[in-house]
View (cartoon, one colour):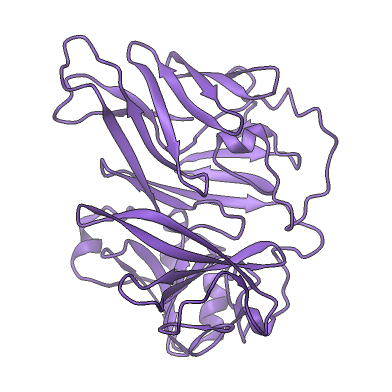
Length: 368
């Protein structure tokens, strides 16, 4: 996990925290298990994937400027194109338990499922907390640093943006103003694959909603959705807004054991406030959805436009054919620095397809 130096006005020295699960893993010592068929029904979970907060048939993940490649058994094979064998040590369960980074050694400790923290040289233990999705929500130090009375009980907390069809997060930010964006590539899967190009009525983006769901409609109950092939799993997560924590109720919509979209409940009403589409299987009647390129979107919809809003921090495409629908893009595909002040001169800045890397694709779709 790549370390960053975290300083605040209250600290007279630096604490080291893991920011974005940027790890290097020893690919030369792969899993002892036999190669298993990867399907969308059974997301792949391995110690290496868990270390990076990933699951599913991940082929490559790009985090900021670093890339990490995995084989189809979920073992890390390369870090920035090179073998990571000199960077990590493992225990008898094939888990990464130490890392050499920034000229120091970081020792990790695990519970039965995932890393629960690590020891920082000269600082002490940093412990992790997770939410029900397995997303890291906080990192905490209880170590008293000599000469620094303010260095006890220091927190880094995380909030998450988009997730994909395999439940992996694509962006997150922390309470010290840093944002991490991940771009994940997957191996092709067999069976009911995530790249299935068919359009099912339960999975169609319509003029007024998605499948059987519509913004403002009654928030559905957990369990099978009547008259459809969909099933709902009820969950919730804690978010922070205007300095206060609040709980957001989320319905994960499952199709063939894959989370294809999420329904967000209105804070004050028992209605659907937002629909977030995560899977390439959910498409418009014209076949546009997650995985479609900017070029295809513009060729399909004559009213297509592209822009950025600093209010939500989203890069998006929109069109008149689907009002109140944002086709979201990744910051990793944007050629320029979004922290540049020119992108904050108005609520919405119009962009051009040429502002993005060739082949840039939709990473999620938001109906509101």
